Structures are given as C-alpha cells and as structure tokens.
Length: 156
Image (cartoon, rainbow, N blue to C red; front, side, top):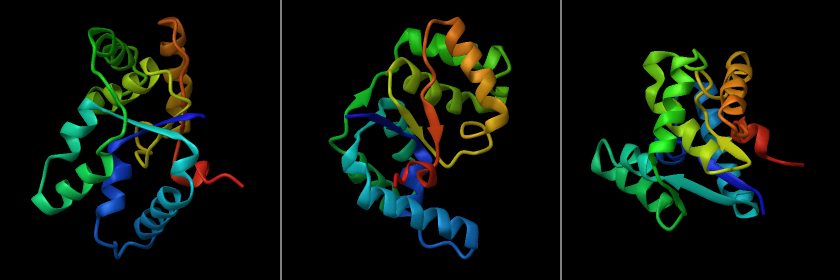
C-alpha cells in the first residue's frame, strides 16, 4: 500500500466551516471527498509536528482536527529531519519564512512516503519549486515524494 503524509491544510479544510470563497469551498469539498473515498486506499501518516500545529487555535476546531489525526502513524522530528529542513531553506528551495513547510517536507522525505498531500500551493505543491526541492533531496541522498493536492490524488 502506498503512503501519504497529510499536511496541516488537509485537516484544516476538513473541519472548517464552508467557505464563501468558491475556490476554497471547492477545495474543502474535494478534501472531504478524498477523505471519504480514497484515504482508505493509502497508509496515511502524520507527524508529531503536525499534531502540534493542528492542536492550536479554538478548542472546537482543534479538537476536531486532532480526532481526525488520532490513531494515524506518526513520523518523528529527528536531528536528521531538522538538518534536511534547514537544507531546503538554505538552498533556496523554500523561502526563509517557510520553516514549517520545510519541516513538513523533510518529515515526508525522511519518512519515505509516496505522496505529500497538501493545499499549500505557495510553497509545497508549487511546480516552480519542486525541481529545487528535488535537487536538495537528491544531494542529501533522499527521494522527494510526489507533492500533490487532493484533486491530483483522487484516482480514476
């Protein structure tokens, strides 16, 4: 079975009130559809860092996010992961203001997952940055997972 690292935006979109913005509302619907129809076809993993992120904020939504993540296997933030995250930023694959995104990416890379699922198209699911991310991962001896949105992982 293939593995998917679920980044913070997935849990945020799953529990958020329906947006009035039609694009965001569409992303929310696609995320809910992927969760209902496709997630069981993968081994879904999260990280200790992700759990910390989704626990922030108002009690009701953070509790809902934590319930969705409960029981999923967790990747740990190791010194090796922190070093790799720093390399993504130092090499310019991700901007300095994207430290958290670099950590999610490093966790997914070091965890050897097949896919990193996200709606973060500014820094992660960004076609202009993926080549740079791949270079950094390769230089460090790793393979970059496919970074995609739920739209791209809906299957047939």
